[in-house]
Image 1: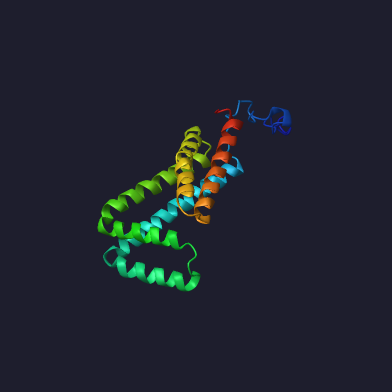
Image 2: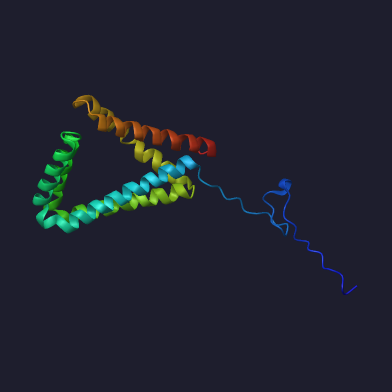
Length: 182
């Protein structure tokens, strides 16, 4: 009997036994974020990286920002004409203000980027707090975006931002309902 092959009691679980490991213990179920939530998380990472790139530009060019802004604006106008002209003008005004108090703006940019990365992490890992953070974070700006869309001349860019933020709120809200958070 010593030469008989040993039987392995560790058989893979059957389809009926999902959630049970090979040794019979209950497996801790891990929830995973849906693909739509992962897309929102990636969008948050892109926003955070964009903010850090802006911080790097401010750090690098804060002493000669006026010259750089003039060059960038002229290059933009040569390439794209007046497309997004109000947004470019607004970005130039913000950058000019930032160059006057660049250490404070760098701090604000890093705080913003940190929030974006934190939210992305939470959404990617399907954390409840991240869903609430996302819905509230995007939802608070909807009335402001609608206001500016009404009181200022029509702007496709502002409309696009409003629509994308509404879509993100809908995606996060639907996932919250699916998870039973609401």
